[in-house]
Length: 320
Image (cartoon, rainbow, N blue to C red; front, side, top):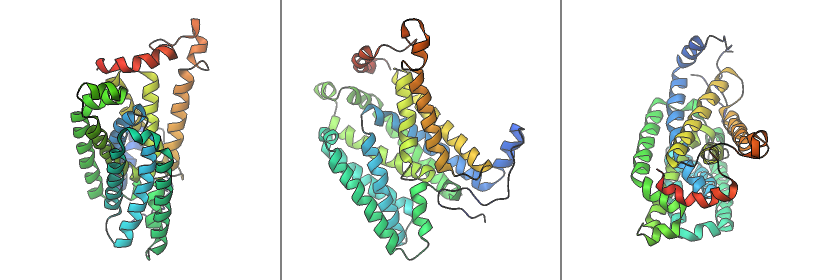
């Protein structure tokens, strides 16, 4: 069986891109590990992209980053106990999310506390890795992802988890959107802001648990945040933004898997690199350094001036 390095590409014979698109795709998907990688990667990307839009909208990017680091301690601890590392990631991430959700409004003012918890969790993960008597690469793989080493069973489990996340997100969509745009008004109108906050953080923990296999805990920020940040910049309609965010996450994952197959470089390099390039392009295209500077009056069609955008975010809740 083809060996893999932590976050790296499988050790298969050199493959050359022939520019025959159909033949190249057929060749790539002829390997079971690539089919498993695309299955799990697509499911993880959809969940991460949709959840990530709300992460950006709610200003919870740092909390999402912290949950991924906490998940590494869970993975290392699970290896030490001899159980599936993904179960460890999920258990500790869910517990941390429940604790953060209990902070409610105070979460946004607890960056220092969250940062300390994140650092302590990463240190705990290193301790567990040191205590682990097996191959340390098994634990370190969760720092950078191990998508090419995922089994068919794990891929199906990832798909099932994504379905659960999407169903829950569909059920929470309207109240979650309202609470994300204006928490005080939503609470005044009877929206259960506290439970929704906890529920969303639990969904975020599940999305992080899935996506860790693609890009690892150190780089999960790219897949979870970049698509949502791009979507928020190019469209004001929440439904459209969700579609853009999910689509971009899938596109980034597919391109990264393909490039990692045909080059010696790992998926965990391509995911953040592509995410950064796409975000940079979207930012340039929607600011004075991009399209605005090329258009009469410096205005980008479909995008209001900055002051109007700030006032319009709350109104977007009625434009579903």
